[in-house]
Structures are given as C-alpha cells and as structure tokens.
Image 1 (cartoon, rainbow, N blue to C red):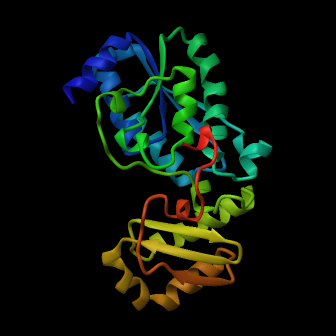
Image 2 (cartoon, rainbow, N blue to C red; image 1 turned 180 degrees about the horizontal axis):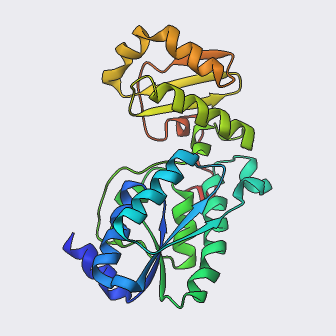
Length: 250
C-alpha cells in the first residue's frame, strides 16, 4: 500500500474515475489522503450500471467528504458497444475517457486515473487496453494491488448478443429481486428469455431450496425461464464461449 500512496502522491493532482466499487473507492481515499483538494472524483452515470449502485456510490463519496462531479456517458448508444462483441469494454472505456479528458483539462488536474488492479492485467480486459493507449494512470495496478471489483450489467450479456437498455434494466431488476431474497453475490446471465443465475457456491443449495420464490421473482423481471448455474459464481464466466482474435481483445 505504501507503493500505491507514493505513486498517487507523485501524480500531483488527479481526476479519479469513481464507481463506488472497492478499487475506485480505495483509489479515491488514497488520492484524498495524499493530495487533499487536488483530488476530484467523477461518477459516470449510464444505463449499464444499476441506479442502486450509483446512488450508493454517490452516498459513499459524500460520506468520505470527496469533491464529486457527475457526468453522463452514452456508450449504450454506440453501435460498436451495442453489438456486444468481445471488445465491448474497449468502446465503453473509450466513451468514458472521451468524456472525462475535457473535464480533467477544465479542472486543471494533471492526470486522469482509474482503479484498475492486478486482476485487470489478466483474463480479457479490453477496457484496460483503452486506458493504456490514452495514458490514463492506474496507481493500484502499478503498485500490484489486487482486489475484486464490480462489473457493469453489460457483462451479463453473452458476446454477440446486442446490448439494449431494456435488457440491462431486466438484468438489474432480476438481480435486485434475488438479492432481496437474502443472497449477496448474484449474477443473472442474460440468455434471451432464459436467466442463468450465479451465486456463491455455498449459497447454491439455499437458492435451490427457495427455487419457487426465486423463479417467481426473476419471471417478474421479464424472463420466461429461470436456471441455476451449478458451478456457482465465476468472474467472466461468459468469456468461456469465445477466444480473443484481435489486439484489442488481448
């Protein structure tokens, strides 16, 4: 953590891309500690992120005493994003950084940073490739910090299936309904009319025991069929169905 603090301190001033997740909150806290009023948080709103998450992020930032700016991004309107190919996250980050860079300049801050961690250097992280290409800083990754983070709702949709606002809202409603039944880690993978539910492995038995309530809640969100993934929650589970074929997908 001392390495991360040093890296942040050396930035001089920074605009932190903040989402309320573990990684971006940690980065914001470090920036506030080391840079004080030379650290500004920016929260991007988009249909790809649940309003409940954005509201919680807003409340957390205010509770921390952070200077918070909010912007709207429109990645879901981009054809390249909506096609939901494996490079979807690349186009998402391109839209985000296109929006944040002018704000950084307006606020006369030296750097734009986001909370990538060591985990983002592996698996399939085209969004991180966008950050690298643009010179965005990632102090936690630079310090080899590794913590799990929140993934946007579009990650619940298989590559090649178009991303729509309606599908994102359906996923958000279904996940909220399952969480309301007492489950913490929940992913609803969107397969058209079929919802494939992932929970932590230790919760699978309890989920199956509550199958009638779970099925009713998920159908209420608009799904016709409800299934449970017996392997449990796994980060990037939809990535199993494809292999990267381009530099942006590496």
